[in-house]
Each structure stands twice: as C-alpha cells, then as structure tokens.
Length: 279
Image (cartoon, rainbow, N blue to C red; front, side, top):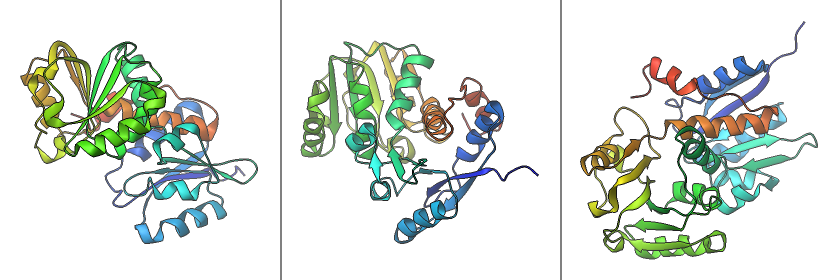
C-alpha cells in the first residue's frame, strides 16, 4: 500500500478564485512528488488555530494569501531574511525538527519573471513602483538585490511612500514620493503594485514616466485586470506585462522550499491560458 500524499494547501479569505491548486498539481506531476493541495477559506479570527491544527494533523506546508500574510508572521517559529524584510509571509513550511519556517517568495518570483523569463536587466536601471502597500513591501528586497540605480516608490500618501523607502534604504537607493512628485522623466521599468487594474482607475502619474524603452509590469493578472496595461500601451511603452509569470515563479519557489526540487515553469503560463484563466 502506498503512503498517503503529503498535505499542502493555500489559506485565504476568500480563496475560491485561487489558481494555486492547478499550478501545484502541474508541479507535482512534473517532479513526481506525492502530495495533495487544497483550498482553505479561513476567516481572520480562525487563522491562527487553523494553521496550528493543520500542522498538528500532519500538514507539510501552506501558501498564505490575502488577508493573512501579516498574521502568518506570528504563525512561524523562524523567518527567512526576505520574509523579515517584507514583514509578511506567503509560505509556511514544516521542518524536520517540527518547527515552522515562514518565507515570502513574492519578490523572488517577480525577479525570476523579470530577469529569467522576460530577459530584463534591472542593474543600474531606474525603477518606479506605483503603490506603497504590502505588495510593494513584499518585492522590494529581492528587487533591490539586483542593484538598480534607483527605486522610486510613488503613493497617494507621500509619507507612506517615504517611510517605506526609508525602511529599505540600507539595501539600495530608494526614494518615496507622492504621485504628483514622480516627475516626467522616463523610467526603465514601472511596476504597478496598486489595485488600479482591478478598480479601473489609474493613479494620477504623469505619462512622461513612460518612454519608448520602458517596460511596464502589473503585479495583477486576469482578463479584467487591464487598466494599467491599457494605460501603459496608450502612452507608448516598449512592453506591458501582467503578473502571470510572477504568480507561477513564486509558486515554484514555495514548491522548492517544501519538496527540495524546483519545478520547470515554462509551460505553466500556457496551460493557464489554455484553461481560459489567463488573458
């Protein structure tokens, strides 16, 4: 009799829209790993008890999504450096000694998509990040690890952008400004980390930040999440990309942490498109 597959899953509220089970099922088949992966819709008030119970019952690892990424910090016995910098956790992994490691794979997922899949060079380039929330905090450390010339964080509330920039200033050149103070000089890379693509309302950033060589990357993805992409293309960017690659690459990094093997990711975005999930 074969052993039961190791239990994994993703915890969020809501979580029914998550593509993680599909992605991890592809990874498991490709690498020959015996594992199950389920969706868990858990309210904030039940999160801590759920996580403790999941691991007590033999669970091996969890992905964490909205709104639990900050609460997951407290669920871990130890954090990786990138999770500590992000002050949020999107991956929990049970270790051999019974302790739980908290990691944040969002930033490395973004970097892998930018550099390995899209072939971009970020070193010595000017980067603009629109938004100063948790999504930005989650990707800043790995992005600054590529040694860009400058990362400007723009936010509706300048003080929030400045505070976030200051928190990461030890890792590289950062600056936090309000939307109206971004200026009109083109950036090499613009990352949208706001909900603009979902709400349909772009922040008031001067279109001059987009030049003919500018690559625009939206952390959001989906058929309806096009406001930023449409704005970028309308102003003549070189390339506009949704965050499907980041979604897949951050999942692959979680899988590697859990199983000790990194799956190939090249065919997964195409598979997402074939099942009608991706635009």
